[in-house]
Length: 422
Image (cartoon, rainbow, N blue to C red; front, side):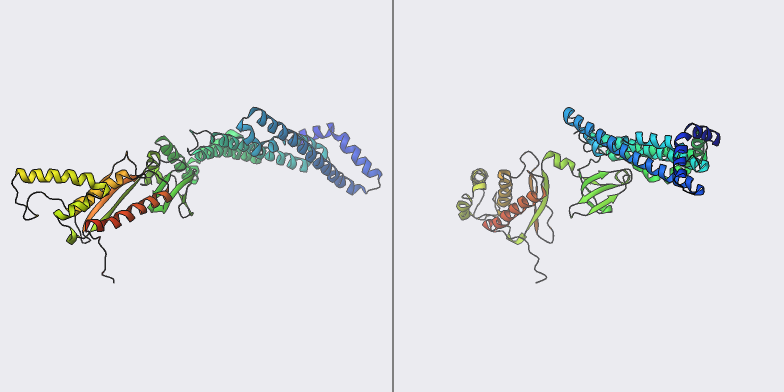
């Protein structure tokens, strides 16, 4: 707005300013103070009018939006209200009043009128950005309610949209402050694209990583991930352009860059949670000196053990038939086929796990011997619990190992203990 336009507007609106000016002069105020007092009084009156209009308009818009939200049940209306959309929308009328009143309030100060008019234009840019941001935030909150999008990294896409609007706002603001055409400012930004990419390097890498993570379904919000390099072991709570937040099980927060999910390796436990079972892979070590053949007089007591009773009976018949068929001399236990205490113990553990109500019946279950080592003969238990809840999982595992540890003595077996430090 140039000074010629200001003068034309001033002449058309000078009636109000002249009336207040004359009113103050008639009150006996010195002429050199009248124009300043006149400006202050008009400014105060304008502020009061703007405040009242904005308050009333905001209340009306808030009421209309809340009523509409209750009647229609549309979540977007509730989120618009929560994101202060009525507050920003209600500023349209007050801004129009301020813009139109600048020539009246600053009628006696043409240069100040230019400054205030430019400040109003600058405020308009910020106001529009605030209004758009409230709409974007409300739309984001609404999309999060959809089950298909609840675990997606929406924050990354929302931030990209916000950055685009902020860039446009900056270009327009720079154009207003410098008086340059918007196209010229954009051309200047194009020439400085290398600097722009350097400034927004992390945001660009984060956005690309978010797209890859989402497209490949690598990580969702709520997934349990383990990433030792960054000290992360917990649930993903947020994925943005620049950070991924992981709430560890010790209640600390680990933040890592999104592109680390693409460039580095990590463990995602989602598959375990979806299948409904958590794996256990642990061994008990048997002293090899306690491993032996089962004596005939021990068979009767072993048949009383519930989980291997049928197994012992069937194996005795099978072994007796084999030994008779091949005329085996059974004066020594080592001859022919025989039962061993570790073999029966291994079968006992397997049957015990198969019948345990908290062991997943449809997933792999193995009880096997591993390579002997300095701790003895390892018997490895490989199975899945019927729950993925950590507390329940630990209780189930403890219960199982309590039982199989106590059961070893019924097979005349001893578990390894390192007594070297005693």
